[in-house]
Amino acid sequence: MLNILGMGHCHPTGVIDNQFLEDLGTGTTVDWIKEKIGILERATTLPLDYIRETRNQDPRGALEVASMTPTDMGRSAALMAMERAGITASQIGLLVCNSCTPSHAMPTEGQILARELGIKGKAYDITTACPAFALHMDYLGKFDEERLPEFILCVSTAALTQNVNYNDRSDGAIWGDGAAAWIVSARHAGRLKMLDSHFNADPSRAHAVVVDRYGHFRQDGRAVRNFSVLQTVRLVKRLEESFTLDWNQDIFIGHQANRTMLEQITNNREIPPSNHWHNVSYLGNQAGAGAPAVLSQHWDELRPGQKIAVAVVGAGLSWGSILLQA
Image 1 (cartoon, rainbow, N blue to C red):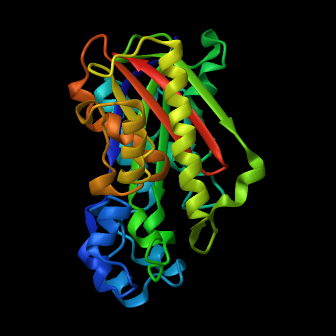
Image 2: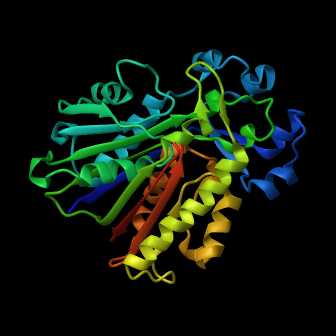
């Protein structure tokens, strides 16, 4: 059985609020964003003056002015996870990384992070953008546990505000930057144990969500939103049917795409607001870092016996779930 021994998160200090986006004059308003998307603020690595003056029309310029790189955020999140787990970098035998906005094509983001952290074990990337939490845990769960390293570090990091076209009223309202990390072990008990994992994908719809290497994010917004809501509901129903979940005690964490989408899902499954953990309202959509960052932010609130149902969807198109128990 896989266990999670510690989790960490990192978000830049820059803030894009709805008034700033309205003031850009793209046709959006504070009220429209709140009603349609439900996000109030977004964490960003970009200076607001840069966004205001350039609208990030050439994303290569964002790399030059950003306050943090995906590597910087991933490193901070990893250090928090290791501290909570009570281990050091020298004990980590494998680092698995996800980043849809890597600093370099080669070496990989995972290899750069391992170097920055002083990790001597293997390091490589397994990327699927938003459902990375489920992909990494499901991937590790397929191994013979005796052959896994004693401690594994998983990291998901993304700086998508650096790939946003701020002349687009919808895209500018969605994205935030952030990273999350978690320490996994099959040999040591942790704060959380994994009861179930699932991951799947439909590559025929790969171009529904795109981040160009030196360009902007783009997606088929309506189709992706409908897919995300319906697929997340299916994932949650699968867990409800396979395990005894009590939404008065257990916790739901979804992909932090936007607040209104999450409300559709929780209303469908009758999950009370008190048992729905989220951070999208004040951090924006952090891609694969969103869901694990939520769990990290609530790390000290976990209660013995409590189940945590994580259902995440995104680019690929891909989807997955994890059921954890404290």
